[in-house]
Length: 468
Image 1: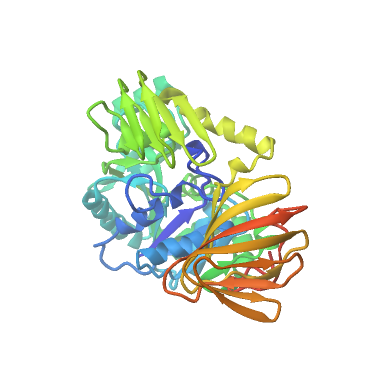
Image 2 (image 1 turned 90 degrees about the vertical axis):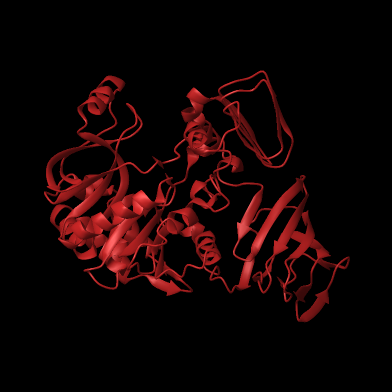
């Protein structure tokens, strides 16, 4: 069985913590591990697992690779989508990448919380047995209430103990309809998790959407491979129809089976949902960071870098990051998406970027910015190297704070240590690397007429970014 980790979501409802270039699945929201890492860790102990296949946005490739590396996971493939086409094409790519068409794919979104690991693993073993018989299995969450934010699956005839034929998939219902579903006991929340043989999924996709499968095959066959990445052909993949697994296959096939599960599942689709799965104090407050409260109840308060104080409030969500503060009643947190839409319309960088930006070599934090100057704190990982590059519109001054830097300046190489500095004039071909065993920390002061990140001419890059 091959875990397939789907990581295409943008997590806009968890703004300002989740951003387009660093969405919620890459964040440690409910533990010290990120949600992607938790998704794989909860499979520890399942017998017969092969290395996973991850499918993610091309922009997130280095975060994906690094987070898998951090937990000692070597994937069989990291498939990069140049554009988002929903889950049906993403899973088709994973099926095409499987080593055998008889491999069972365990399809898991990367951003779910599951509290009961043992019960989940038991349901996975059951799903594997059904999938090996050629059935297409989905996991239905036994509802805890009349939720209108989820789609539902209606169970039909029993297939084997603990599983039922899928009678129908139902869109998100009204509150009255949801209450009827829960009372009947025949309906389950649609979790978006699946298990089926790679070959069976491709067979059903060919039956119901041959155009999609044809586009996927062409894009996969034309893909390029570098490092751990499979880069799909952008032009060919862009021609692929976009659709979910539910619409493309599961609603149409007569081989769909649902396994009802009660595993403490939550898709963490909003701040109120995150409050539900976070440990709370005696006043039912979920607190993170440097927070002081007086007479505060049933609230979620998250501080990233500053002291946050609440007095005499309840049922609030307060989230502070280095460049934004969001305050909202818990019952209105779904409207955060509208704020993100406003930011996008205004072309504000806060919609997509944090102040701290991660790169394959480390990260930088833009601490100050003016019309013709910008100051960054830069951390370079041991053994990492920035691209050989030059800038047309800016000069740079580097001050080493910790560690050792090997600087290439035109044809000259200079080794710098703590409290030393160097000036890189405009137009100079240069490179920075960390030859040491501890992180290199430095301050960069940029000055010039244009300070955008796109003012980079790359000549060499160990991370394959020359085409960008």
